[in-house]
Image 1 (cartoon, rainbow, N blue to C red):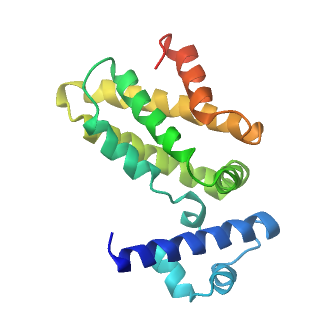
Image 2 (image 1 turned 135 degrees about the horizontal axis):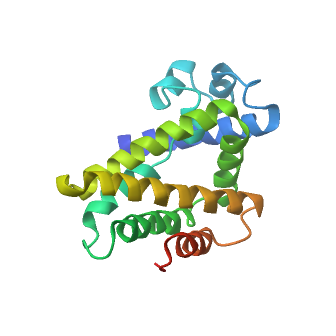
Amino acid sequence: MSLRDRQRAETRHRIQRQAIRLFVDRGYDATTVNDVAAAAGVSAMTVYRHFPTKEDLVLYDDFDQLAAATIGELPATGSLADRIGRTVLATFDLAGTHDRELLLDRLRLMISTPALQARHLDSQYRLQEAFVTGIDDPTAEFQTRAAAGAVLGVAYTALLRWAAEDGESSLPELFREAFTSTFGQSL
C-alpha cells in the first residue's frame, strides 16, 4: 500500500470513528455531515469524497469486498450454502481482529435507525449479487441466489444476537451455531 493510500485509509477511518462517536452521543438524525467534518478536522467535501452518503459513514467497511473476493478463492467443495457460509465465517473471523466497540456501535446504529436499516438491505442485496458473481455458475444462478440470501439471513441473526449480548460472545461461534441450526450441517 502506497503512502497516499495509507493516508486515505487513515483519513477515512478517522472520519468514520468521529461520525460513529457523534451518532452515538447525539443521535444519527441530529448529527450533520458538517458536524462530522468539524470533529474529524476535515471539510465536508472530504467527508463526501470518502463517504458519498451519510448512511455510508455507518455502513461502509471492507468486509463486503473481502467476502466477495474470498468466495472465488475457496475450493468449490460442499453445498452452495457451505461455500457461502465459509466465506461469511472467514469475514467474521477477520472482523474479530478489528475494534470491537466500533463494530458494536455501528451495528447498534444500523439496528436502531430506520434509514440505516433500509440501506443495510441494499447492502445485503449487493453482497448477494457479489456471491452470485463470485461463484460464477450460470447453471446454478437461482440456487446460488437462494443460498446466499439464506446464509445472509443467518449472518444477520448472529449479528443481532452478538449486539444484544454486547459483543461478549464470539461472533464466529454464534454464526456457526445459527448456520448449523438452519442448514443441519456444521462449518
